[in-house]
Structure formats: C-alpha cells, structure tokens
Length: 198
Image (cartoon, rainbow, N blue to C red):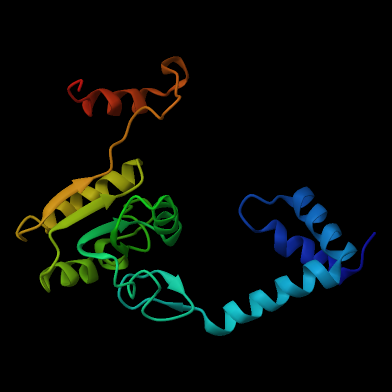
C-alpha cells in the first residue's frame, strides 16, 4: 500500500478529533496530490505555531503571545469575566462576538470519578482575579453536564463572599428543536429555566 512514513502520517491525523482512519487517509491523499500548495503551507503554519505557542498567564487561553489577544485587547470590558472549562469553549463563545468581556479558562471540570479536585483546575487563580477587584459580573459558562454543573455550583459557593454578580448560561431547548426529539434532561432544564412571556 503506502510507505511507513505515509502510514504514520495517516495514523497521526486519525488521532485528531473528528477524523477517523478513512477521513485521515483521504486528507493525506489530498495533501500528497498538491504538496506545494497544501502540505508546505500547513507545515510552515504548524512550525510557526509550535515555535511560539504559549498559555496566557492571565486567562489560560492558548496563543502565540502572552498575554493573549483577548486579554491585551483594550476594547474588552474589564468588569465582565466569563468562566469556561476549556480553551475550545472560550473560542466558541468568542467567535459568537456576543460576550464583550474577558475570559478565564479552568482547564477542566470537577469530577470525583476521574479524580479531578478543585486544586487540579484553575479555580484558585480565578478567585485571585476576582479578589483583585474591578470585576462586577462573573458568568459561569460551564457545559450542561453533571460535572460542569457541579463545577459551576462549587465556584458560585466560593465566590459568595465577593461583591460580584453571578450568572450562568441558560440551558434548555435549542432554537429549531422539536420537543419529541429532546432528552428528558434537556426538557427538565428547559422547564426549570422557564421565564415569563414578553
């Protein structure tokens, strides 16, 4: 079939999220057909990122400079802080352009089954940021999982003594969702989060 080097490339790509062995093989074949216009720019971009990749010492985002683009942006609202589990969550929320403030990446969520304790994620660093003052609102943007909600509850308890407004993302029925296709947990959360008709 293919040389060991090409098979190694296929296997490396297959480990990426969303790519299985067949998709990885198709991607490699595409790259091999046009190495000058596809493979070389990708290799160059990856080398540049690898050489400059850092974790932001303020928020935990990954970028090629510290502080990251978000933390160093003077147009951001310094008084609003959105707490997320992972960098991918930060990127998804920031891409929406709906949150004008700053972010804080926990680097995980509390999980007794996986042995993840409060000291294993960036909760203490979050508390220090809030303690320094200047933050009016903390938005807890945890995933709608049991562990995510337990993490949000724990953080809310730790922030009770600070003069900040706490809020969290609403959970429930997605836009375009049909009730008979939704699971019981989603329906229960939607009913608990119901609000008056405007």
